[in-house]
Amino acid sequence: MLQVEQLHQYYGGSHILRGLSFEATVGEVTCLLGRNGVGKTTLLKCLMGLVPAKEGKVSWEGKAITASRPHQRVQAGIAYVPQGREIFPRLTVEENLLMGLSRFSAKEAKEVPGFIYELFPVLLEMKHRRGGDLSGGQQQQLAIGRALASRPRLLILDEPTEGIQPSVIKEIGAVIRKLAARGDMSILLVEQFYDFAAELADQYLVMARGEIVQQGRGADMEAEGVRGLVAI
Ligand SMILES: Nc1ncnc2c1ncn2[C@@H]1O[C@H](COP(=O)(O)OP(=O)(O)O)[C@@H](O)[C@H]1O
Ligand SMILES: [Mg+2]
Image (cartoon, rainbow, N blue to C red; front, side):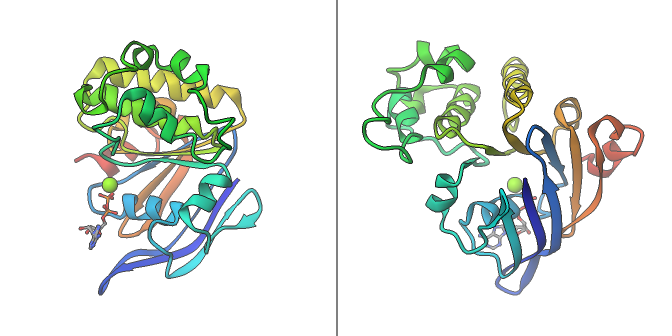
């Protein structure tokens, strides 16, 4: 389980995360929704250790990781798909995926595990193409595949549907559902696309002004008026 307690973060003088707390359970998709600029990406960067938390506590599998460096969090089984994908455009698809294996020994990191190509057959077809030559949707699939290469137990995704065509959104949704169904992973999905989030969420969280202002079960999202809270 991921536990976040009373997290605070600032950029200069602006207070971005204001005592934010929540939990994300293994075997569930937790969808975090919120309008632009409320601090969703900042929260994820704090969870990854890319920006240090000023105050508060982050625990994963019962251990405090608040002070851990990003690579230590990867070692602890946490993987991150950043907003805007951030693949390596000049590396091939295969090389991008191999980068995701960096937490393993050289022997274990020799080749791309087959399950990634099974989840995303397009990456096998494109394995020798440069990342930068892929479409936006294919790059997103590559970014998710690279994160999965580290065999995470906590997968964090920042707006994976942003700027992506509907057919690929469907494929990404199917992969997230498949991963969730395995039951051994916790998935934290930040989304602004309400329908996508509502379809996948076991738990939902709504963020505003640097706090969680509402939460509940995914099945109750419509009844609890979440669509109106996050409509752009
Ligand atoms: N590196 C940064 N330096 C200063 N301000 C930032 C930085 N990154 C984000 N911000 C500001 O922090 C706020 C939250 O941003 P962000 O976490 O990206 O929100 P979201 O992901 O919900 O759109 C916004 O007002 C944004 O302008
Ligand atoms: Mg963001």
